[in-house]
Image (cartoon, rainbow, N blue to C red):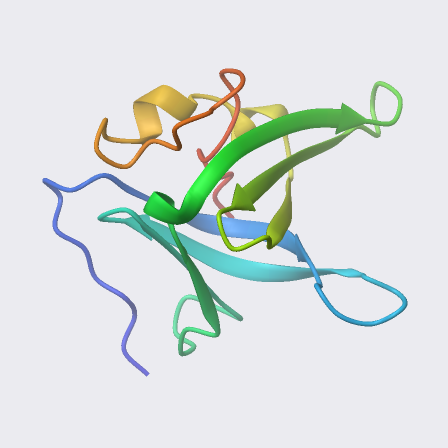
Length: 125
């Protein structure tokens, strides 16, 4: 399977994040490979796997960021809320993995109600 490629002139980020499942009684987090390019956030099981889902940034209404836990074991979580009622809960490996929202979005693709300066800058593995 060919790895997804990108045009360096476009807004681009890639890396592993944990994504919370949307279905079932136990909504566990699974490691997924995310790519943000040209206003579309896609995810797959690995860099070489086919896409299993995506979110268009134009469908995002809010981007919320939070930390949970104590120092040394903090979880860096952000939630992407969409116009169609689906929330995507993602977890980065470090705070660095959730910073620089405004630098990572082009003005045309920034969610309209971004509430703080955290977000889609992925921790790379």
